[in-house]
Image 1 (cartoon, rainbow, N blue to C red):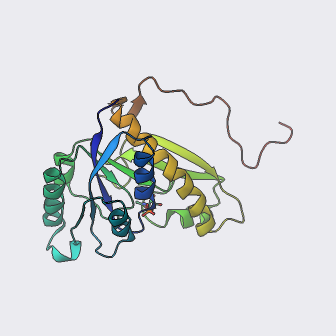
Image 2 (image 1 turned 135 degrees about the vertical axis):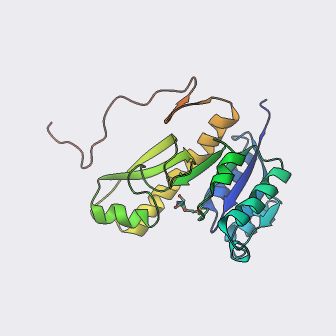
Length: 221
Ligand code: GAR
């Protein structure tokens, strides 16, 4: 059996991605141990999920800090004191400072509800629907100092229907987020991830299928 990797999960809200990580750990599919769940929002529902599963939590309320750097320093302290080896941002709605990336170099993952590099930032499901893209999706990537710019680990592609609203699309994207995040963490836990500049290679991984995706589907061509 693999040694379990110690993760720290950063949350701000509902925590459905956190729940998926918990479920995959409890189901024996993800070789990780949640050392701490840290929220910047004292009201986050994610914290209640932790109580149910007896997972240690910390609240570091950004409103109580004079600067981003001071807030980040406190978050780094808490994560380090908990023995965190990999930081997992799961709906964490704060931009991190350089100090954070120096403290955990290429050891911070983020999930984003769009097919990066399209639609970085916020309200991205709405933006994808308004733009009229035929596919959107979700991306797990290593976080770097840019906004949603770091090396991409795994993506899921979701077809977009002309009748989709931001909510219907977000719900379908979220379902896939709950699959690809545990997978990305498991690749990391297995020590299979190699980073070459912007490219992430998963050693001994299966390669993607060769056929293209079309939306709407091709009828004659
Ligand atoms: C998820 O859709 C996640 O991709 C997104 O927030 C949601 C959190 O949901 N994150 C971002 O937009 C970060 N830029 P959850 O709290 O239920 O996991």
